[in-house]
Length: 183
Image (cartoon, rainbow, N blue to C red; front, side, top):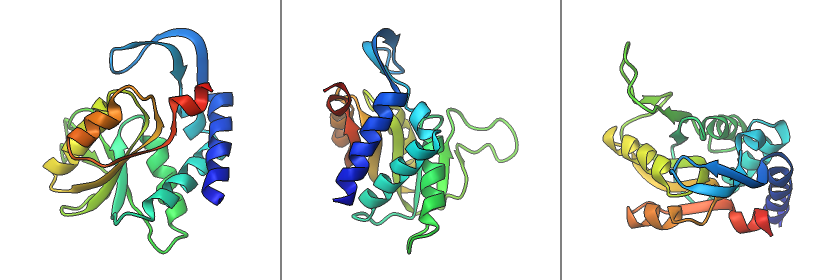
């Protein structure tokens, strides 16, 4: 019941703060769309961030994970608030960020934050269209000898991302879908 109320609240917040309709936008995937979801307007909002994190923590109760992370920039606010809220649970989750390219100085890392070889992780993204950014994050995790237990999107645009991720062996969940927002 709590999860359904949180989902309804998240849909309301996304519709109010993030959903733009009757527009033409080019997406990260290269596709053109007549609606746009600026999810960071929700994930960087206090109420939106809190609601998103609560839903993700509920979902993660079904998985054994050691950390949560994702591809910058969509995942950054999500993993940060999930890590913060998880501190008050019996399973605190460190957060990590996958860079777009390795750092050019210092440790030359692709993954920033606490991340250990052998960890099982959840990989998140704000909006999934084709799943390309999420796949890049999953591959970076595996290159560092981690294991992806689950991938999670705030919003699934229902344009092949789920299928692409699952075809590559990554379980996929979404908090809401395009249909939840456009109905």
